[in-house]
Each structure stands twice: as structure tokens, then as C-alpha cells.
Length: 181
Length: 211
Image (cartoon, rainbow over all chains, first blue to last red):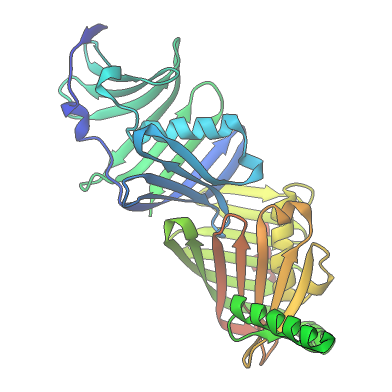
């Protein structure tokens, strides 16, 4: 794999543009299944809110992804209010929302068939992996210093709104599946 | 002076009740309501209804509206089938809970998921007329010309951590629940309105079978 130079051009077409979208959501974690509805909404100040409720309307959490890569927990139920849970969800959603992608943190690598558009995070690197022609976003990946820890797949419609998103952790049994409704 | 103070406190209390639930005042004789409510519940063996659920996300100024069908049959069986904008089935039967979410099935026994159990018991109590024997809540009863309102304030710690209060609206003409409003600690609220209610409809037991 070799290091190459790149700009933001390639990834721009794959960046989701979500004014408001509602997703039927399944979360599977260590053998337990939780389902519900996930609302993603961009507010007038361009911050992005993600609120997850169960089907009967009970709120699990409400997160805000603010300017300057700031993050806010507006609400979370006591059962989920654990640093590890919040950090994991924050990082997962930051990956699929194309957050924290400053040019100065860019590392781009290429092998014979793929380009790895990497962005250094506080811990680890987020990779957006495309084909060498940049015609397809094959997957997104969160990696620690040593190995990939999570990967995500997203399928955008013509308006750049994700029809489906799938996030899967590689180091423990945790996955999130979103289907637009 | 004392009576002036008392009058002011009473006016303030009534005013607060009205402000929170416009058109409703605190019921003067709750015992006679409870008696009539229990008697009506005794003669209601089943309920079949459509429902509309509205979730208000207060800080996002957004709503999620879903619809479906609801069945209740004595003693403690409920089937809620969401049909729009997603498919989701929940059956409560004898303390067991069955959930079908797409292809995924989940069975919860009586001993697990305490909060889930309490919330589902609340649903059964609301439609089954046994709400006043539920020690998880303090209750207050109000009325308007068309409806009674049972206000529930959670006293069970785990419920109080989730809900500020729960309102059950009772139709005056048949003492059946017409709506349930749940106010969460987060400031969000959700309401379930029951439409096209049929009391004592013939409902097959198989609807409540947990596979």
C-alpha cells in the first residue's frame, strides 16, 4: 500500500445530506436485540441531531453533533448512560455522518484496487474506502493504531440521503442497522 | 384571613390543574368515579380499536406519527400491531411479552426487563380498569364535560427516572380509555389515541398466542 496525495473531491459525492430522515432501526448487542426509530435531523444552525426512540415512543437517547466537531448528549436513559456506550455511538455516527474530516488530518493510501481516505481522530483513524476511480464508496472503517474496530456500509439515494446504513463492530458483537421509512 | 388564604390556595390549585390540562378540573368525588370505573371494567371483557401514536420530540420540534391496531382481552392480554410507517407486533399474555420486529422475534419473561414490564402493566391497567391498584403511581382524577382524566405520577424509582407523569383520558360515555399521554423526563412526550373502539367485540384467543 502506498501513500498518495488527494483532495476532498472524491469523497464529496458520498457525503450524506440529511435534512430530516426517519429510520427503522435494529441494534444487536451481545445477543440482545433492541429495535426502534431513529430520527436524523439537521437544524438551522447546521448541527445534526440523532434521536432514538422505541416503537412505542419512549426516548432512548438524543445526541447533538455540533460545530467544530463538538458533541452533546441532550438526553439518554439511565440504562445507557455509560461512557463506553456514549463514546462508541458517538464515534460510529461521526463515521457515517462524515464528521471530523479536516484536511490537515488527511492520510490517503492506495493499493492495487482501493483508495483508503483516512482522517486521524483523537484516537485512531476513520477510513472511507473507495475504488481507485472513486466511483463507489465501498465501506467506511474505524481503526485503532493496530487494527480495524468497526466498519460501516451506507447506500445513498439520488438526493444523497442514506436509504440504509449498517454499522458492525469487529472486536465485539455489536451492530446497528438503519432502514429509511 | 385564613379563609381568604384557603380560597387563594384552592384557586391556585384549580388554576394549575386547568393550566396543565385545559378544560379539566379536579374531581370532587373521586370514590364514586372509581366505583363506576371499576364496574364498567368488570363488564368489559374485550376491546378492539385502531390507534394513532404521536411522539413529540420537544427539543427537535419534530413529530413521529405511527398507526396500528389494538386488541385487549381479559384478563391480561394485549396485542398491538403497528402497521404504519413500519411493521411491529407486540403481544402481552400472562406476564410474557412477545415482540416481532420484521423477521426478528423476541420473547421476554415475567422476570426480566422490569421497566418494560411496568410500562406494559400500565398499558394493561389503563385498558383493563385496574389502574388504581397499581402501586407504582400516585393518582389524581380530573374531569371535563366529556372526559375523565387520571393523572399518574410515578413513585416507583425506576419509573420516576423515566416519566414525569402519565395521563389517561377516560371516555365519560363508557368509561373506556380514549388516550394515554406519557410525559418523559427528557421533555418529550408521546400519546396513543384509541379510535373506532369496539367494547366486548368477539376476539379470537389465537390473536394473543405467543409462538
